[in-house]
Length: 141
Image 1 (tube, rainbow, N blue to C red):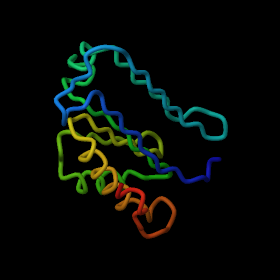
Image 2: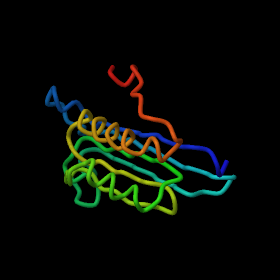
Image 3: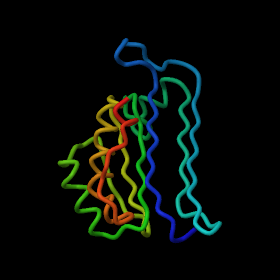
């Protein structure tokens, strides 16, 4: 529905960097589509085929973690808030697609992605649905 609130993230980890185990073979495909009243407003696809795609400049640039955060019903003011929240961390990029804030992460730490996404969510929660941020206990696991 056009008046529904959306706040979601997706974080993918390729390999196990803490154990120095790299994603060297195999493939992964992730699709994310957001529809409003049956019409697409955001369509995304990430396809990784072994270590080659992880190292390409047009792929993961050698990074093992990719993430996307989406929040809808936002305005251009949200972008300024997000940029301040992330302190210009080079692993994150932010854009506004119509009224959808899209925050991307490409780096080597799932924890850094999660921490950044929580910070953005907390900053924008009131704009999203007029509620103060109250971090769910499950996010601590």
